[in-house]
Length: 281
Image 1 (cartoon, rainbow, N blue to C red):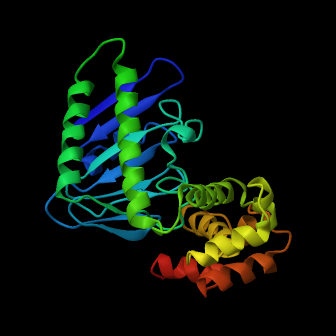
Image 2 (image 1 turned 120 degrees about the vertical axis):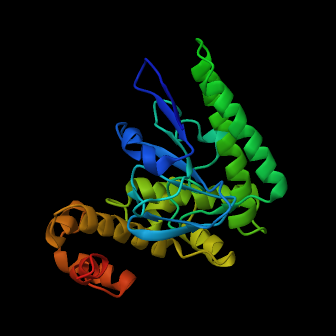
């Protein structure tokens, strides 16, 4: 069943469904949705983000944003999803509260998958029940109550993601540098392509940034920049009719040859070869 809250001001929206594939069209009436995707079933679940298969085991959670294309196989099984937009809860403006950017939303080159152990699963199931109860309670503070519950859900997922996905030897300051670097790349990859650009934004030297990523066996900062550019190129190749030349200029390349060179360096394919391969032709 689908539940939603539609705020009267600024078009704020929060929706929850335990059968999201059946309700996706209704959700998509709203722009700019960020999704928390939770496999509450007893079987592995397969769906697609940007046409790439994603596997969620029972009790696993992942996320997607409005920058990504979320799709399902024919006759999909039920899946629990929470969807919200920026007017309902802006994770950028409230980053100091939840510290989730660059870990579970935005700036993450790999789809984050968080696993709930039996104890955490009980806690999340209880939170799910509280959400259900609050969606059914119609009064003038419903929106604020739901916002508090969403913030709690995001914080709990972010804490688990830090424990499961980030190197354990990192302290909070180092995690903040890495996640903020990732977020800045997500925001500025079209016009800023040098590590020094982002180091300046973080008030660090390029060497400090590079050494931090290398010390903790992360992808290099330059590799993250390049992969983010190519990720956007892939989306444009798959979901628009734009040519490689048009995409190159949209992504800030002055020469198409430079775009082709970077794309092939990251993917080992030309843009045309990638498009043909992904579309089965």
